[in-house]
Length: 444
Image 1 (spheres, helix red, strand yellow):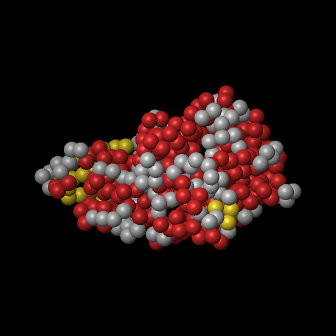
Image 2: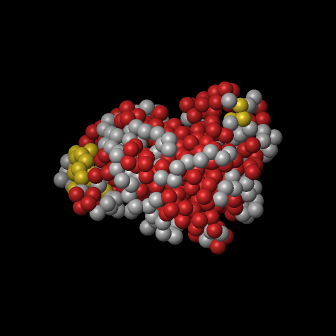
Image 3: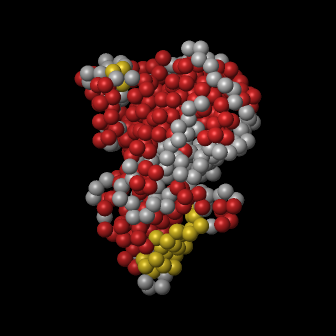
């Protein structure tokens, strides 16, 4: 596997992004979309409190917001990575990759942003692509065991590759940084999702921090065994890893964006509900039947969720929220919407079953039936949702999502200016330096 890993890194190292316009555009879109999620997530009290406490306990030079000039201290790079990753996934609206069964981009972005002031935009995007490609490939190869959560696992490998590349290390050293991280990948539990505890939102931050430290260690001369990923799979996951894709194709082009603030598995049923909501009288709905692929029920089987995190991983809640409110964004997880009696009644009516053929074919989709008291029976099947490679977002749609997630943190004008900068700045521009100085003109 190490030879295959090195082969991919050699290829990526030679890639010129200006000659790969589709890849560069998708990378810019991922940066924009994830930053929008970060801006929204920073408004959550636990995230903002962590930012304040971390800055006081472990001062650094990373400042994010307009009031940074009045802050006593900034964040260290490691704590900045934790805060950024926590914020990005707080509302569960960030990117993902179906083949990797997770999100290769969040930990990479969180690990890179604290060092972004020292990089041109072109350098930053290239390191981001390197990290994303390595992470996505390992996501497909290293399938976690039942009871684990993916966020604290293989994303660290992509983060290590990205930071090592940003530090200017060559392919051999980048591969060593990946193996260094593999020596210490954590056992991250799915348990907090079931219990509704937000400790799960620290997992990607840990992955980003591990990627940073692994790359810095290798840059300093610390060595790592070349077969660490294989050893981890056999000991940590009790399995032989799946094939590592060493072909020269860009996995980032298959990365998806989320129109809804929920786990991707929830999206298919939610979209079906959105369609049927327009033609059904909710007062007459007696029975709600949802059929999905097995993986969706494993990760999103939470019923009657009591916390937003449980609800973000709930097929029945996402469907019911869409029927009730016609939207599934951070607003539905706030009070009083979250505890709405009608919403709870709809969620209780949902019956979930597994489609064996979809499961066997590893296809994603949902079939929704609504049965009403007047004898009406409505049905909708969804196999693709906006943001999928088959139904890609448009740039205006991504910009609208970014602006809406920035509402409450900055003006619409400022958000639009920031979006334009991230989407169209030249490769030699430096759109991020303000994050490392409290005296610069900050975006929020």
